[in-house]
Image 1 (cartoon, helix red, strand yellow):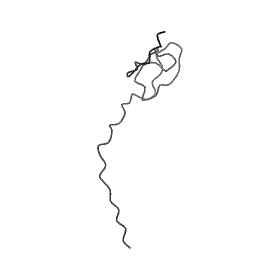
Image 2 (tube, rainbow, N blue to C red; image 1 turned 90 degrees about the horizontal axis):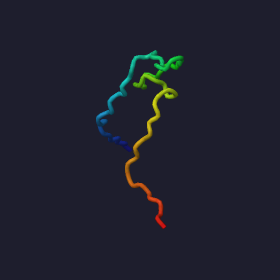
Image 3 (cartoon, rainbow, N blue to C red; image 1 turned 45 degrees about the vertical axis):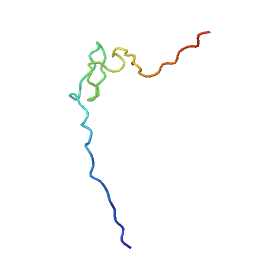
Image 4 (cartoon, one colour; image 1 turned 30 degrees about the horizontal axis):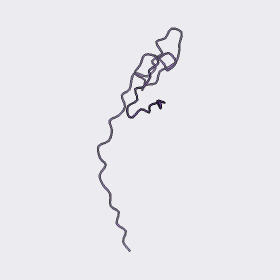
Amino acid sequence: MRIVTKGTRPGRLPHASDTEEPGRICAHDGCATTLSVYNAAPFCWQHADVVFPTYRGKRLRKNRA
């Protein structure tokens, strides 16, 4: 009995994530948190500005009685 395996070539791979210099420290005064190489912001999560996401799609309305 002969087994045949078929496959396909891989498609386009996603590009690598952008990175920053390793060893960066949070820019907030007195914070010594080392930032991730994937964090492009100058602040750690505790000192970053709060950003509320904008949700898209159908919004539910309250019933008008």
